[in-house]
Image (cartoon, rainbow, N blue to C red; front, side, top):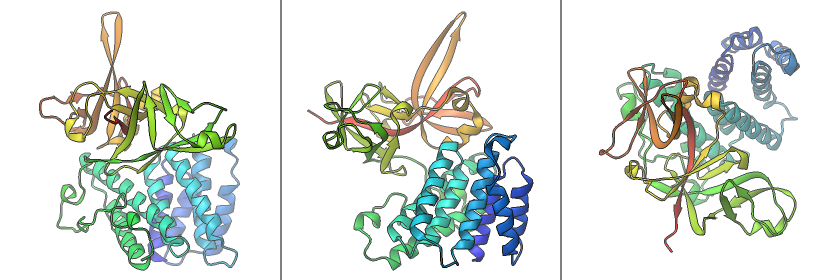
Length: 387
């Protein structure tokens, strides 16, 4: 329970980015050796009842309710009415909501807590959550290191995630082989976090090789005798005939663009299943070989997430993309004319400046200007199948 209290306390602090007295009181209670459960429940009920329209700051009611619901779930785990399947659905919904809000640390902590709590109920789901938490926490730790602000709590959470992954694998011999030996996020030779090792040694860089993935098109309305479309992409999927006019989630393994058949790939540390909505997709064709060592070549297609303009230009959002492949939209002004350049590069930060880095020594890095240029995270690389 002590580990749970630490993670819950860290979660509440991460949610309380704009100080709220209710979340601050929750954090104070959780820091006590034996928190008053009655007071915790009363405060949680109060925070859950906050109407969204009463919130002064954007997202305040959401953060208060989410923090309170997680504390309540932690308390309910010891009660006879606790339902693991219902908790699993709730935790999955919380993760999706936090992803939508761009709150990476709370998402990772909730995934780690969920994996700890529901490991006996569904080991495969718990393994997926623990691995996701590990990946997010490593990305955040890498970003903190690049900014010169190492984060001890992140290292501790990564250690917990790795320990939990080992426990799940040791206790669950029936897990399919692909979920153990080659599971995404699992680094069998990854060193433990120790005070003597540097962050650069602990955390491997995001880089190739690429590996096959699947595309999961979320909530697309399927029409009779047609394939779902997103931009200029035509998806090849046999499920369209089975659901002629329903709202459905469609899993796509291959797709056709301009008469050519493409397969989906992601970097080794990315999700093996890419979930997107059609109205949130950007697709560009690659020209040149500046990203050759990342496995991206001329003629490939890039599938990127469409981010609203204000957010895409905001350095506070860019922090979540450090170390990742991004689609950069550079704005260049020549007297009265404005031009846009589209680039695929890896984002990094050095000396308090933002850089787009190629993965080919023949190309130079590009300095970014916050507030002017836009960054969109790359979700997948589409490679044509040789005809």
